[in-house]
Image (cartoon, rainbow, N blue to C red; front, side, top):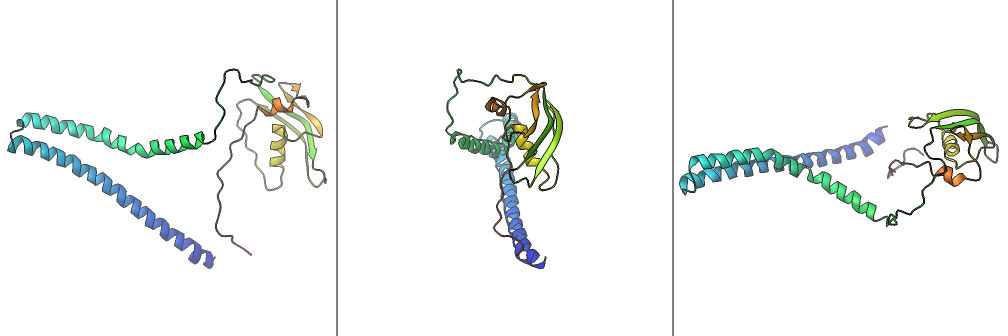
Length: 210
């Protein structure tokens, strides 16, 4: 614990503090600089009106109020730039996939249109070495329902997900859509009903332990 605190935690905390202070300094400097520029512009308007005879005081006051009312929208527009830049970066990454252009005649899966219930009935599965097996599983999932698979390592969560998505075929039991068994002759049509969203991968530069 002392090694982790002194050699890992403290350097990272100090580096984090350095970047936070630097970022806050730049941010506050930018905000204050914008205020200085705005007030300077207002002062310049009054100076030009009074000293150079550019306009009377009423016109200068009108310009000053206009600048003050524009201050908030301008700051909001500037504050939105990081979000727009992030969106541009994400869009560029999507373009790098070089996906095929959309065509209206692309075939769409019609094997299971508008299904409402997915049921596992007495489903069992075991690996080839019979070291691990799951089942019998009886599960009914309604369309639009949100489920969480919770369990410890090796409890069968991944195996159940593989069975649900059709990547593993049950050794016994059956999978039903709207009460009708899913035929083993149409696994691709069944698998097209599923998609996956994976979490970001985090790589650590050190390992703790022997």
